[in-house]
Image (cartoon, rainbow, N blue to C red; front, side):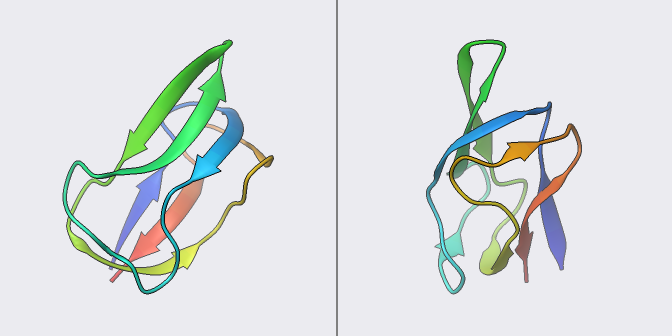
Length: 70
C-alpha cells in the first residue's frame, strides 16, 4: 500500500478520483489551493484507490495523507 501526501498545506479545490479508481504514476488526483495558486497533486505510484481522506473544501496540512493506494 502507498500513500499520496500533500506537498504543502492548503485548501482542497478538487478531488479527481474515488475509491475503486485505477491511477498511474504522475496522474493528477487532487488540486490544492496554496498561496493563492492552484497546485496539482499527482500520484506517486500506480494502483487502485483504496481510500480518499479529504474532500472538496477541506483545509489540509503539509504532509497530510490525502489518498491511500493498494
